[in-house]
Every structure is written in structure tokens, then in C-alpha cells.
Image (tube, one colour):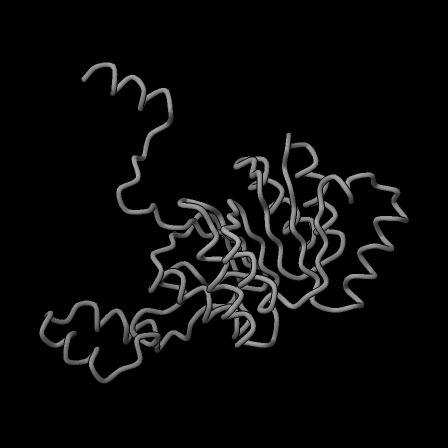
Length: 234
């Protein structure tokens, strides 16, 4: 199985598992993979995909491919928006738009991706899923780390990268982890946190990753039948 097939299987299996109703994708990414996303969502009743293509070329390429394949899902399933994500997502948020599944394709512009991710985080429902492609690029690494360390996201699934941290670094961190607490606290005050807890330690050293948003405070973590039974038994 080649890389594209592996990535396609990764994404479509998560769609099949979660059966999202409202999906947001930022960037066209790989055209074949995006078409597979459309086909998977098309199998789910009442599913909808908002696809933001920030460039004219991405927009036209997607339309051409859909017309070539004569796929009838474009008008029913996909809302295609040709506007940069950092411009359109604030409007979505203030219109109380919510999503339960997001796919974010990498961009070199850190500021745009940071703004986009900020609003995706706000619109994503409790325990929703966000998939980040090219998670091993410098920009996306920082954003993944932010979601896990600052926003309480948890690792759901990942495509592992073959890159490993240097042996010396792993040895020094193992020694640090064995040190007494007071020494650790002193070191943390002067050393970059990324040197003490690496992406590999967090499970983020991967090419594609799926993260789960934290459960909102006060939310009951049970299905409807269990909740109903607990109310009846009270």
C-alpha cells in the first residue's frame, strides 16, 4: 500500500467510524484523497462538507475533477468556498456554525493556520475529531503541540513517521525524568519545554494525526439509553 492509499484509508476509516454530519475541510490537499472524503461522506445520511479552497487554482481543479467524474454529490454534499480560511471562519463562528469533524491540510503561512485552527477549535463540538495532514512539517508540528499541551486534545490515531529524535537527546531526557522533583522544576524554568517533552513523547511525531477535542466541562459522558436508564432508576 503506497502513501496515498495509506492516508486515504486513515481518513475514510475515521469518517466511517464517527459518521460525522458536519465536516469542515481546509485546503484541497491531495485531490484524490479529497474525492475519497466526498465519497465516504456521501454514504452517510444528511452529511455535509464545507470545503474551503483558498486559491483559484485549487477551486477550479476541484470543479474540473468533479465535472470530469460526473459526480452528483457537489450540489447536495459539498459547499465549496473560495475564500482564505482566516477570512471566512470568523464569520462562521459568529453565525454559531458548529462542526463535528475537521480535516486541515497544511499551509506554509503560520499566522493563517493559527487563526484557522483557533476558529476550528471554537466550532468543533465536544469530543469532535480533527485530522491534520502533513503533521510533521514545522508549521503543523507547532499547531499540533499547541492543541495537545494547551487545549487538552488527546491523540486518537496517527500515521507514524520514520523520523526519530537523536540518541543523545533521548538519553538526556531519560536522565531528566529520573531526577528529583525540585531539580526538574528548576530546569523547567530555564529550558525550552520542547526539549523536555518532545513531539515523540506526546505521540505527535507522525505524518498525519487525528486528535479528539476535550469533553466540555459538565457534559455527561454516556449515551442516551444509559442516561435515560439512570434517570428512571433515580
